[in-house]
Image (cartoon, rainbow, N blue to C red; front, side, top):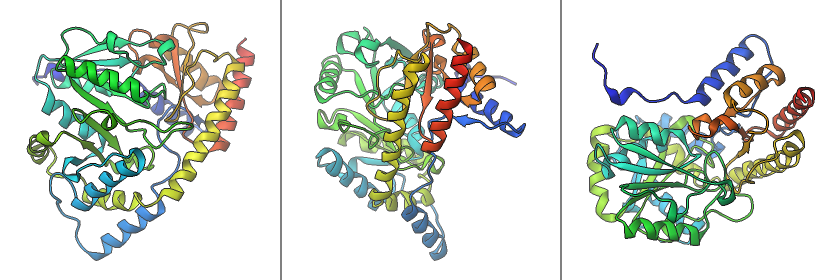
Length: 380
């Protein structure tokens, strides 16, 4: 059968690592999961209860394409609480996860053949979604000295878009307000569409993350209930767009998705009021981060930019290997710890990097670190 060139995207290597870890567990091995960026906690209790009530009360049919008005208002209120931004709920669009938001954003902003800049290392699905839409991703090889974040002078010539992420995946590093303002100003001066991925907001350990909405309204901001709200499988996210782009997004959303999942919207609305439980989760990640930063350097994983947020450590392991995929497989086989090779995040330099996730329970992190220590000691 005929095939489209748009379907020729790269695999998501972390999913292959997850499958190898699953196979090892199925064979009876104990595996500590440091490969996947997924909270080890369920959706907040209040969210689960709200959905249970709604399921008893009636059918969960289509909602309007932009999402439940009360959820859009709740998300707008979140920006006032977290960032001091007064946001018109009409600019909030509820989506089928952040992935749905990226599809809508890229469809609304870019034409086939356009070029979009993005920092590397960075979330791999940016590149693959762009390619599937016949848009060319243009990598910016960011430096560890700049904490793996792009600088205005590094934005390539002849690009139509710029994607930034703060906290970033895989680095966990954040852009400050002045840095975000400089990138936004450079994009505006060159008529470059700015997309800000803020999916890890709420997961910070010292200074709170800055939203691009604090420095400009000329931006598409994308977020999700997956990470801070611990609702990965519910596939519910949102985006904030300029006022004059709302109808454009609405038309696309009507045709591409009809509406976000009604059940997930109900749970998400309730999750906005579950701060105590969510902050307790964040405290676990903070302790996990402390343990990781204390233990990894002594094992030889000492070339890292300490993360400001999210739940990842990104390590340069070029002094240990130039084949991170083989090294990750070696660690899985020898230590029973699943980690992610950097090839997902940086096609050019990722053969010399690994990402460690600390999203699981603290007991799992302690066990994983003990196994890694024994493995690296034996390897040396």
